[in-house]
Image 1 (cartoon, rainbow, N blue to C red):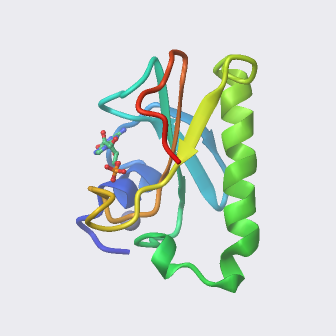
Image 2: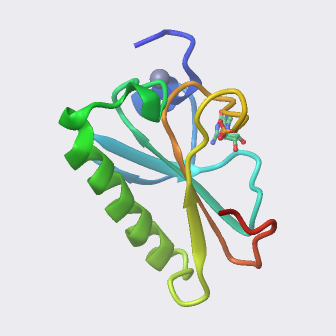
Length: 115
Ligand code: 5GP
Ligand code: ZN
């Protein structure tokens, strides 16, 4: 794990974050600069740079992250009104933290519509 990775530091508890979920493999915490009324990040505890660095061995982990996203969305009261789960990969997507993370955004109308 790179010592300078802010998300590894959050997993290790060395940098404070408002954690909403954690287990042996996955941690969820509130984004420090929320882009919606509810903005939560879900990450693997293991340092994986981006989706590009996943393999078939990570299929279960990736599925579990999406299931945590649904749990968070329900707990945040977003399930009925709607929410977005997204991950930015690389330069053109403006990935700014090189530790794989999924955004869960909701609580208000999200613009622009992606995809
Ligand atoms: P990206 O732009 O890479 O898709 O998303 C990175 C996200 O991490 C941004 O939304 C940013 O606000 C969030 N972030 C960056 N540093 C920290 C931090 O130290 N703590 C928390 N909670 N979120 C962070
Ligand atoms: Zn990391």
